[in-house]
Length: 428
Image 1 (tube, one colour):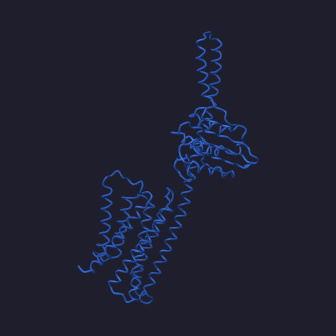
Image 2 (cartoon, helix red, strand yellow; image 1 turned 180 degrees about the vertical axis):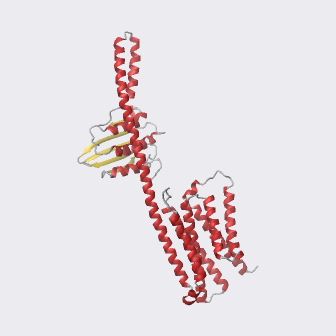
Image 3 (cartoon, one colour; image 1 turned 30 degrees about the horizontal axis):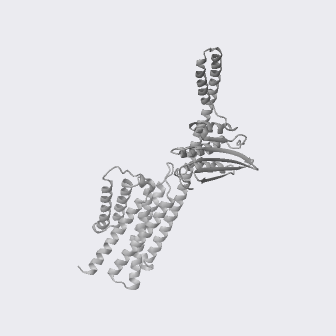
């Protein structure tokens, strides 16, 4: 086997492998790929077989039918089905695959035309023209997959139920059809003005598709934020309704407790046996446990504190909020702020020995300052969504609610104590 044959085989393998690997790498980047079903032991075998078939089709189809349109159609359908059935199962994933297919076909046309131009200008040999074309195709494929990697990892947005994707799917499909028909029907134009105009045409179509993708990302991102805001509002409304119902139950309980105390006092007066006194004291303690502790003048905040702190012992809680005016906060925002902060604090209490929670507030000049601190066994790291320092997604909701009143939120950790400080300007 001569060296030229070996080099030709290597370039042929480079063409097939680069196309197959880039196609595989794109679908493996899909975020929804993390949630693909992995319980089937044959999934990896199916994927390997699918990509082997994809590589075989890229070789066989151009040589069997000699029909570029048929080759494009079959490879596109095969590729989309492979990604959808074995990887992402997502509408947005289909859009990314179609975009990649269009970019792949467009860059291949550009590579062929650019190699033909170099062949004519520098009088290259036929084999050199083929090698140049393959190198350009592989290079453009790497650039394409790099661009899509950035798009998927940095700007990926999920498709919400009401967001229409059908129109966007037509953009790369129509673009591929236009490039194909323009290629096969514009021989007279190319012979007169040169084939480099096809490169310009493909580049313009690529720019249009990039702009459409960018526009879709922005619209989809806005839709996602609206959907997230709607869910947050629904969650806040449900939480607020829960505490409203809880307050009503407390009010009913106080009436019942008041009547029971009156009956117990009458029984105590009529009871003559000293050994029964311990029984009445136990009943009074049980009734005290059913009542509400008075933490603050704010009615809604007092209900939240009673509900959240009931799992802690009295010596674990220090609360100094009496006299602090929080009436400028709506009940909904009071629930959002303090329910989330206390939930995060109680999350840190799990598995922590000698847990302590302190909540105090005071009026400092023209500002109302609220500080919540608790012991934690973890290390606080800003920006993490895990509960390492008990920071969770709830802090984002708290931040949004605080900013409505032109307030500020500060978080930090001092040793094994995590703290959150809220500061509201006066007359918020």
